[in-house]
Amino acid sequence: MEHRYLGRSGTLVSELCLGAMTFGREADEPTSRRMLDAFADAGGNFIDTADVYGGGASEEVTGRWLAGRDRDQWVIATKVRFPSGPGVNDVGLGRKHILASIDASLRRLGTDYVDLYQTHGWDRATPLEETLSTLDSLVTAGKVRYLGASNVTGWQLQKALDVSRALGLERYLTLQPQYSLLARPTEWELLPVCLSEGLGVLPWSPLRGGWLSGRYTREMSGPPAGSRVDAAGREGWSESWAAYANETTWSILDALREIADARDRSVAQVAIRWVLQRPGVTAPILGASRFDQLEDNLGALGWTLTDEEMARLTAVSEVSAPYPYDVSMRDIANSR
Image 1 (cartoon, rainbow, N blue to C red):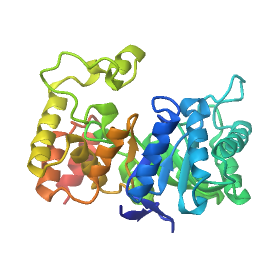
Image 2: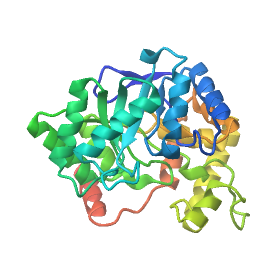
Image 3: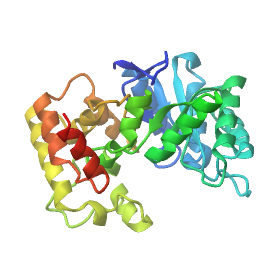
């Protein structure tokens, strides 16, 4: 596994990040530890979790596994924002919740510092200056090495960077956005901000909840029982069958299968490889509930898509941009 710098920092992370969202939930602890071992054996050193994954179980499983490793060789990322308890202050990005959450995460992870501490979303109720100054204090105290953001809009990310710069505070080093062949609007504002400001990009759901795994075909009338897409339909998640069972998705999957067959690769490996080779991307986050899924996903390493293959996948997955992005993109193209 190759390694890349994490944003404009001197820290190197593996080109794939292991997502721990399923640990202690869909994946029991023995399965989770087996996945962690396989990821380490492949050369990975970057793990992403969050305080709310599995109600804290994800951090606990990761921490118990990490206890048997050289901590300094690992880059551990976690998050704060969503409800972590029953109290009225157990949510958001206010100083009280952040300070309580980092200490709880450190206890569960069994470590005295987190390499990357990410805000898990925007908090419109808390002044941005309060959030950013509190995060800055965590870096000063040595509890956190770097800061990152996730699930924000372009203007929110740019505003946070500008406020940090103006106040002389530690700024966001990374962005964790949804990004895949089925989530291209991320390119309209978020990726340009990251490229301009030097943020590392850590895409989550590069297989869009399993849609790009190769499991789904045009001939199917619905998702298999027990699949994530099946659960999405019942739970109201965004990757439901109703949202993606359309010609756009089938055309992308047709192209993926043709390239996968020609390269003797799986559909999932080709889909991950496309994200991995996109401008600005540091490390796509792999999420798996079974060991065989992770094993297949790791097959995205050690080879590259050709320029022609990248162009074909980019073209077939292109999304028509609404106003004002259509005007902006057209003006840029015409000015060159």
